[in-house]
Image 1 (cartoon, rainbow, N blue to C red):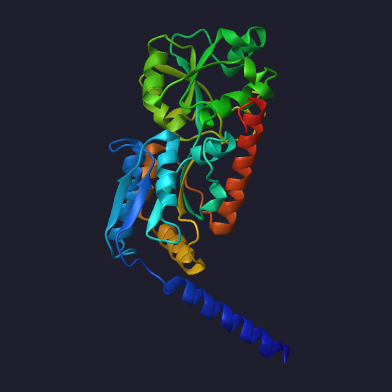
Image 2 (image 1 turned 60 degrees about the horizontal axis):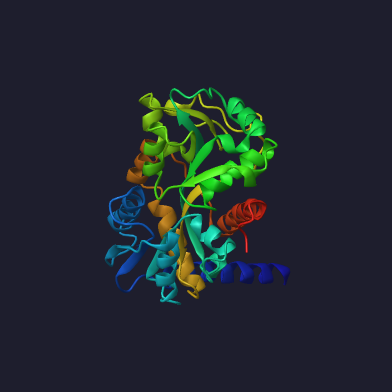
Length: 324
């Protein structure tokens, strides 16, 4: 009897799995919603994702990238929210999905939308001009301990990942993060230009995106907020931990979310299709070229990963007085 029950359970699980994988597939045009304008790095990622889905015939209907910039991702989230229960709408999101919620800038909650896949992860780096007196991260933190307002840091969004990273590092180094001098720019490119022009003294931005000016000798990368050193051209750059700053790691992630209320079968389809798309050779080549990684996290692991990142982010925004 026990064997019969076990066999029945296994059979039901197999049927359920097969149904989840084959019980639904896109029936009309799919939209990948992007919170940024056409032409940028995020746009290139979304279009490559669409290409992978169609080249591998994982989706046989058209896949369109829909750019919905504005409001630090709130416009794109609002657009997704207009299509509850419709699995033909996907959101390529960043950690702003967290920070908007934590700061009370939106009524949407990141948990409202099922997380389907982690596209890739980048890390924040601390940069200074090549001629800066700060040669190491210790030099920088020693100055901040003496006078926290003597160094102007650029960030892309107040309360965003780069702001949170510099605040966490300052706190771990014994500096009150509320006393830091923060200058907000609209894009990383603007911040880099200001840094090279001497308008600010330090920047916290994407390690991958900052590698070219570092290689060109225009910037010096002091440390990277990553669990281990990155390979390639910046392999000489120490991590924050190696620099004596034991702060939690906040990653700059890109993830794909579905609309609120889609079914388990629809979630399973997208989880499988995106996992397959992210193993394509073109996708791997793009990640290698851009020095980013993509941990293979299935839905349960991804949910736990996002929860951990959310809690770290909320903690530092509370320290900054930005949490609602």
